[in-house]
Length: 430
Image (cartoon, rainbow, N blue to C red; front, side, top):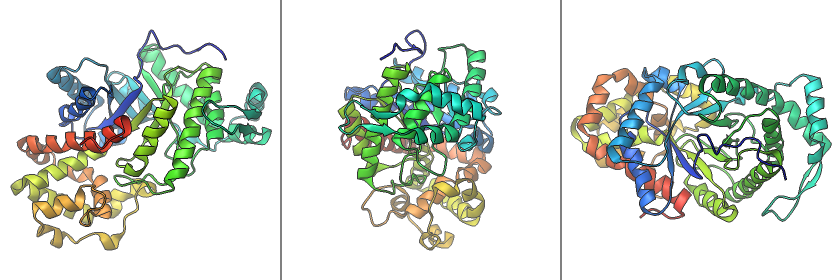
């Protein structure tokens, strides 16, 4: 075991449990923070991380400073005394500059660079320097050893080393602007075509340590489908086995590579992965490990649910947003084609939806497993349709403000009951 080479004790440190939550229109920070306060009242510290990507800022017409301002206002109003962070979500080398003043958490996304090979001499040097990983490795809490062959070591280096080099360049740019220890770095590799195995994750962590990046979270791609706004599609038992191995691999990397002691997995859930939440809770408790859950898009959907529930002009606008989304579904779905699975036959016509009551609309959109009225295709379409509301500008925002109470109640209840409670407390939150 070696000493931690990337100590964060004198800098910003992400807590053991944290939740990444989006607020695309900047009106729900207080409602989201109330969910973390409810967890604190139950004895669990869950640190809020407000995140918004460059693409979302461009679509909404906002700037990173607006996320910082909304978070700070919520913290002040509710008297939150624990840390909180603002995440530059899925940034790259060309977009990071926009976020340097406002953010203190950086999700460095290098998925596009996976598979691009580093120079041969760098691959050979990495393989030589990490020969200690070859053979059977004993991971704490795992009965069977993790066996790494020379072929796996070289193939993983060939596939991921260039991506890690890219992450290093982005990290250095942030560090030059903000100073070491003044921000939380995460590396994201989840938006790619194939899941990373626990062996690959361990080798990737060795590369990250070798590049001198003091990551506090890492977001791999897990097996199964993580479609936007709907439940996990895949083998839950397989996910749990792989998740446990990933957690054990991180513990090994902390012990042997000198990465920060609070390093943990980041689960970019796409929202609402209810069937794997018990597995995440079980594994983190078994290994006494932390986890970062990112479930950003849920808030926007709860705004639509709240408007529909309010009735009147709110319901009318919710119906109109659906009609626009239906008419422009190819445009809206294009950027998300790998993370949605919409059955066109399950989408009701706008004419039908115009006749829906508040109860019918909310029952179709609200993700309540087992409710026969719940429509996952409709939910996925609206999940990617926030651009429609953005085009409405002040008209949409004024209705958010006019119906703040009902919307905020839905936002808080959804984030706490359906996400925070099962992942971090191991219960339904009821």
